[in-house]
Amino acid sequence: MNMDYISGMSQNLQAFATPSSNPIETGGVHEAEFLRESLVAALEEMKVWVLLMSEHAKFIRLGLDPNPNQEEFFRIADQFSVQLESLHREVIQTPSNAPVEILFQLRERTIVMVNHLIQFKRTLFQLLEECKALAILPAILVDHIRREADRFVGTLERSKGKVTRNRQTLGIPDGQIPAETVPRLLYHRLSPAQLFKVGVEEVEFFSRIHSEHAEHLSMSFRPEVQENYRKTALFYKQEFANQIEQAKMVEQSGSGFEALASNGIKISTDFNNYLRRVLYDITTCTIPTKQTNFPPLLADHMSRETVYYMDILQRLTVR
Ligand SMILES: [Fe+2]
Ligand SMILES: [Fe+2]
Image (cartoon, rainbow, N blue to C red; front, side, top):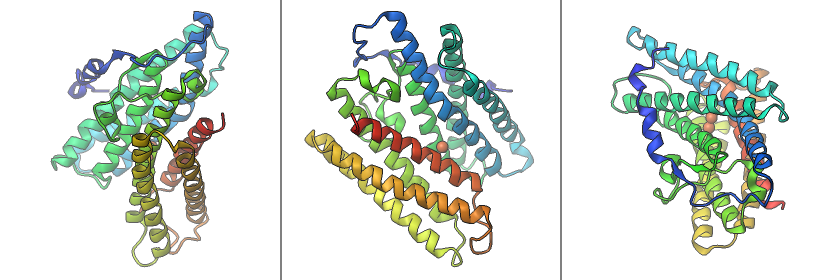
C-alpha cells in the first residue's frame, strides 16, 4: 500500500502521548497479572472495533466518486478493508488465555494499523472539505468514523497506561481536557471520581455519534415514499442531542449520572429496535420502493455501535 502521503502524520499522535495523570489502580495484584488483565481488556475492545474499522474502510470505498483521479483512494480504502478483515479474524480466534506475547503483539499491530486508517480518514476529510476529493459519502461522516477510530485506539493505549487523546480529538465538550478512554473490562479498577468522568465522556461521545447516525439516516431515506422512517430518524437525532446537553449539566453539577445513564439506555434500546426494524424492512424488501439510498450494512453497523454503548452504560450503572 502506498502510504507515503500520510506517512509521518501518525508520529504527530505521539505528541499527545503523556503518562496518565489519572492512573488505573492495580489493586495490589501482581504486575504480571495486571498486564494480562489489561491485554484481555484491550482484546475485548478489539473484538468489537476491528470489524467496525474494516466496515469503515468499505463505506469509504463505496462512497467515493469513481473518477480516475481517485483510483488511489479507492485502492487504499480497499487495502484497509482487506487487512482489517484479516486482523479481525485473528482477533476473534485469539483466546484470552493466549500467551502474553501474542496478546501484546496483536494489540501493537492493531494500534499501528488503525493509526494509519485515522490518518487516511483525516486526509480524506480535509480533501472533501476543500472540494479536492469527490464522494457521495458526507465529509461529516468521514470525520465521525475518524473520531470512532481515535476513541478505539485511545482505549488500547489506555490499556498500556497512557492517555493519548483529548476531548477535542473525540469531538466532545471541554476540548483540552484529556479523555479517559478506559476499556470496559478495567472499570472495576477505577475510583468513583474516575468512573463519573468516564461515564460523562462516554455519554457525550456516543450521544453525538448516535445523533449523527440518525441524522445521516434521515437524509438517506427516499423523499416522500419513506417519510415515516425519516421522521423517526429525526426524532432520535434530537433525543441524542438532548442527552449531550444533559450530560454537560451532570458534569457541572457533579451528580445525576444514574438518571442520565438510565435515560441513555432507554433511548438507545428504542433506537436499536428502530435500526433492527429498518434493517429487516430493507433485507426483506418490504420498505416502500424496496431499497434505500444507503447500504443495508450501515444500519447493522449503527446497531452494533448502539449495543456497544448500551453495554457501557449498563456496566457503569449496575455495580
Ligand atoms: Fe462506525
Ligand atoms: Fe458510527
